[in-house]
Length: 293
Image 1 (cartoon, helix red, strand yellow):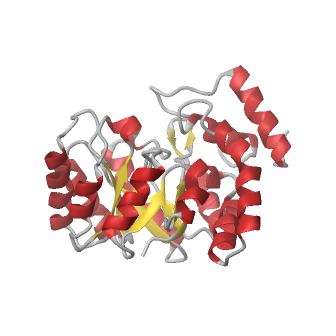
Image 2: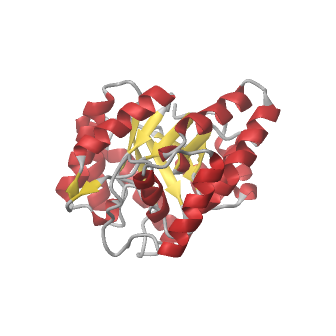
Image 3: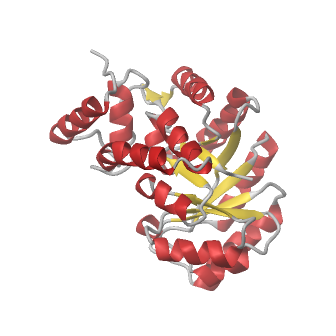
């Protein structure tokens, strides 16, 4: 259901407000690149600093701008189950193809709490749901037995895996079955995950090089492993540079250097440091990306 390249798209700002003109151009860029889906208002989209009104507006605007040319997997997670249900209902109402639900952060729920949280959301809506497992941001790891149990709920159809643990990902693929879509939540692990049965990626780097990420996945899927491996190794240094500071600080800086958006970011995140900006520039130039100015 959710396979291939999904971009964890940034939320561009201008003078403190969402820059919808820039956002429209980003959507068109991804249509031309063959991106399979847009993931708005996730971590990369700075969802924690958007107002509830902005969050819903971004989902509605994404659905409108995409206009069924790609899938829309809307970020609707929260550490409040009730709030996550409301956001997911809004995504369903807006016409999103599915919703991405991060594990509750800060609360540090038990494994049973995690199960009941996602089950409650699934029972409140009809659209397909993808769980987002990222212990580094949420303090808890969704274990494989719980994921396997969740995969039996009809409209929970996949997971964005950012545990960094290929062993766990392999277990999830084995225990949840072939119809459960396991997507990489880490650009550096997209190709390794594809090799063990993953279906694609929710990508940060695709904000700046969507065509190359798409080409790597397509090459793998048609059996051209050498091309896929070459693209992986070409992208790897740039991928590392994207996380030289907390995401989405570097990717927004990179997009600003390309003239795609401003480098505005909301507190408590701050603009990239001068020393890391220089490192980022160097990797972008090495890659062959044209910088503005």
